[in-house]
Image (cartoon, rainbow, N blue to C red):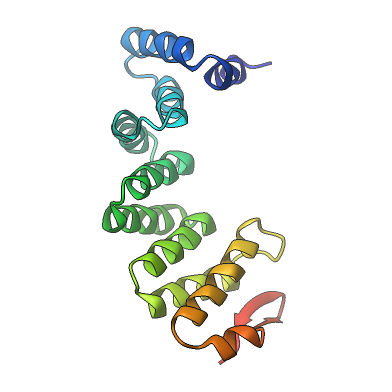
Length: 173
């Protein structure tokens, strides 16, 4: 088993010990992206968002292709009610990495902000891009129906406004 798997197990079962160990590793190996990422995970596991966020941002800067760091940084912002910051972070993750997860979360944040047309567009784009078996599809389907309902288009939401065309989901207009 890789060492990182052992540390992740420690994060789950003895978080205080994991944080002490990881703080020591970060102090001894300050350029270790993985140590910083694991320490951020340990903090987030305890919902110590104020400690996790700067680490995730640092990891994302050091390893721009690490989607999990970008997603987690956005989640940290979302969890403290910084919807604009979360939206910006999810959009940046989508633009830099093209992850459908970030697009789906953008839809969720847009919905929470009351920007229903933008939320519907984000979900529609996800459903167009994502493979049908993507784990993001069920949440996007729920999201788009909820956004349609909240936009006063309950009749459209109740009539399954989505259909598959050429192997992808499409919003029927």
